[in-house]
Amino acid sequence: MHVLLCIMTGRFSSRLYIAYAPLVILGTILAALVPVVGFNAVMTSEHFASFLVFVILHVTALVHYIKRILTPKTYRMALTMVLTIGTVGALTLVAILVALVAASPTKGWSGRSLSLLDPTYASKYIPIIASVSEHQPPTWPSYFMDINILAFLIPAGIIACFSPLSDSSSFAVLYMVTSVYFSGVMVRLMLVLAPAACILAGIALSEAFGTLTYSIKYQQIPTLSNEPVSEEKTTALKSAIDSSFKSVVPKDSNKEKTKVEGDEKVKEPVKEKTSKRIRKKEKEIAEKHVEKQVERKPLVLPLEASAVGIVLLILLGSFYVIHCVWAAAEAYSAPSIVLSSQMSDGSVHVFDDFREAYAWLRHNTDENDKVASWWDYGYQTTAMANRTVIVDNNTWNNTHIATVGMAMSSPEKEAWEIYQSLDVKYVFVIFGGLVGYPSDDINKFLWMVRIGGGVFPHIREPDYLRDNQYRIDSMATPTMLNSLMYRLSYYRFAEATMDGNGYDRVRRTEIGKKHFKLAYFEEVFTTQHWMVRIYKLKPSKNRQRGKNKRKTKAVSKKITQKPIKSLKNPWSS
Image (cartoon, rainbow, N blue to C red; front, side, top):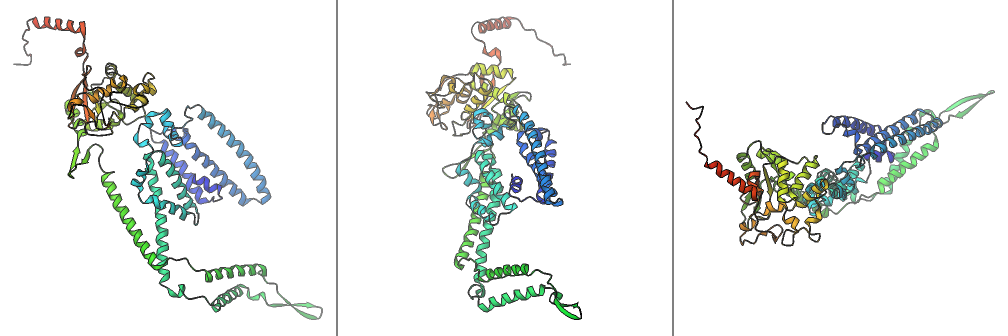
């Protein structure tokens, strides 16, 4: 975008060509060497704009080269020919690209890129992208939390970039504008905004410090600030200009040469080599420049205001450093796997339920057992519990994630059958209703429904809503109350609450279904604060009902009535 802006504003130069052309070629080659990227570096629509600017840059360079070596008339003819051939070639290239892009349902754009261009695209068509908290738009407090006082210095930096506007300053302004837009679409792109904010804020602070220190320095020289400029000094400066211009005139310009006409010698003045009109114009320009230098009085601030301004800027920077240190220690360095909260007496209470659950899985399950959970905890389970998971944070396989979402949204029996088909032995859910942890699976459940419904149409979001409201109380729908997620989260929850009423501290309401039993899953471990609840799938022989169950009991009685022969250990001596 910056290169295209420079070309359109007539700022093309060889430096611009050297900076951009190798970047496109080397960057594309290096990106294609990454196995995950491969030929996507040249086949996806996100990269077509850079290639188009690459072509425009070469056409512009060719035009400048031809203009230097050809006469104006020949240049016009060549320009017409180049424009004709270039237009035909460009139209052909665009037609090929349109044909290739039209074959893709997303027009060759990835879901994340389309979400940047259309913030509502992901929520409409790709719920797996919209479900990620990093892809949500940020709030105004998050801007102040991340960039703090830079938010107020950025406008001043943009204004300073326009006086004067250069290639570098236009790049900074363009960088700032685009990064502000993209950070407003996804909160994770605040990382893109941070460097641009630092650059513009640094420019603003530099200009402010420059003005204030110049004001103090200027007022310390009274001869420059208070002494009026006399006419004698102005006349002396102008005479100096006259003498400098006279010294430029060649020595033999006023000499006379002798010309013989008949018997008489006629003296004729030699023509001056320098045109009088040009010298007169240059002299006028120089005099105007001197008059401006003499008459212009610099705009300065009072000494006291300048000193106070410098002190305030230093204090502002100091408070910003304090804020950055605090944010780095409290917000950005705290591990998400170990949570803490401050008690009323000032002490810190640590919630170590995640590590407790992963340690239990590591020491109490077979190393070949498969564990199912929502994809948010896949990488943690693999790394800390050393167990195979069905889905993890690599969200490229949307079908697997949708299958787990369908299982969590289904009734207990259907969910058991789905997990059996995936050879799952253990299922765990994250629950925060007892201690008030808001990022639990109940709050994420609607995303499981949406993602599962995107692949399996029989999962419909309205079946889990009552009057378009997501509820878990007595007004919740039967589909919601019978879903596996609800049953695994709230199993024995009423017994754990103080009054036995099953009050959920996150949703701030009593649950709708309090006392029920699980037929296809058994609870094997629950952490100290009930934040992680692990269940094991019951084998099929433990779930028989009715006649089959009675037949099994009769057969087991017959087997127990037979005498059991003692078997000798063949390995004993």
